[in-house]
Length: 171
Image (cartoon, rainbow, N blue to C red; front, side, top):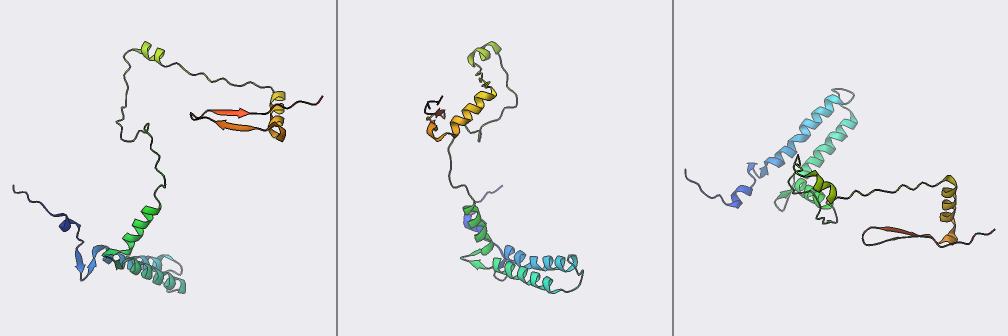
C-alpha cells in the first residue's frame, strides 16, 4: 500500500459549495427558513400571519445573514465564538502541584502491612470547645467592644491568630 503525505494547507481549506459560499455559510442562510416555518405554525394565531411573527422572522433572517458574512476569510459566527472563548476564560491560573489532573486513578488500593500504616500516620484529634452560655455572652461582649481592639492575623501556613486587648472591668 502506498502512503503519501498530505500538506496541511489542503486539509484546512473550506470547500466552496455554491459560488463563494461554504457549507457553514449555506447552513446559516438556510436556518432562518426552518425557524420561520416553526414560528409560523407554533406561535398563536396558528398558521396565520401576525405582525409580531413577521418582525421576529425578519430579525432572525437579518441576524443569520450577518453571521454568514466573511471577514478576512472567516465568517462572523466563528469570530464571535473565538472572542467569547477568549473573554470567558479564567483570568488567573493557579498552579497546584497536588492537583489530580493527569494522574492515574486506581480503583482499589492494597495495603500489605496495616501496622506500618497505622503507626506512620498519627490521627489529629480536634478539640471541641465546651463553653457555657455565660462564657459565650461574655466573649461576644468583648468582641463587640471597640476598646478590645480585636485583630485577626494569619501566618504563611494558614494559621489564624486572634488578638484581643485586655480590658479592665469596672466593679
